[in-house]
Image 1 (tube, one colour):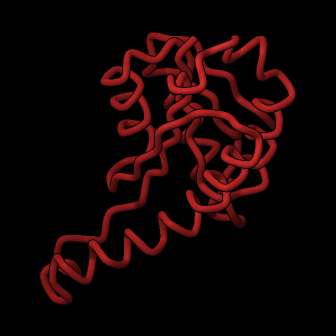
Image 2 (tube, rainbow, N blue to C red; image 1 turned 90 degrees about the vertical axis):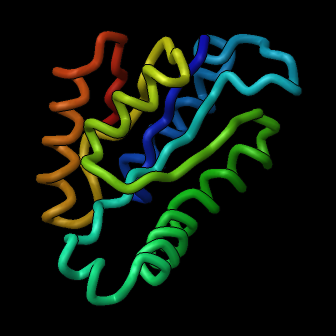
Length: 145
């Protein structure tokens, strides 16, 4: 089974990762070590156009690189330490749209994600992101609380 794991660095993303590990055989099967059935994605909120113009595209890209690295690095380290093959990426955009689009591009069979994001605002946003992913996706979505 090909899974897309959406992560944002929140405790709910960590719970989704732990759930994936605990159910590794059921969810990922006994895939070959050289074949990644898991794709990890982090979606960064885009910088408003006026701010992007003011600071410049290179600074915005560097900012997104650094922020996504803070999220993806520990996830990748965890997956590496457990011998789980994966691929990863980050992008900037509307989280729900980007998650669903990535799942379609990768021909994923299921999307796995936490139910809430970081902080009070993040909980509201990720809750709506999870809700929108469920509404927009044509494949199963596993939400981890």
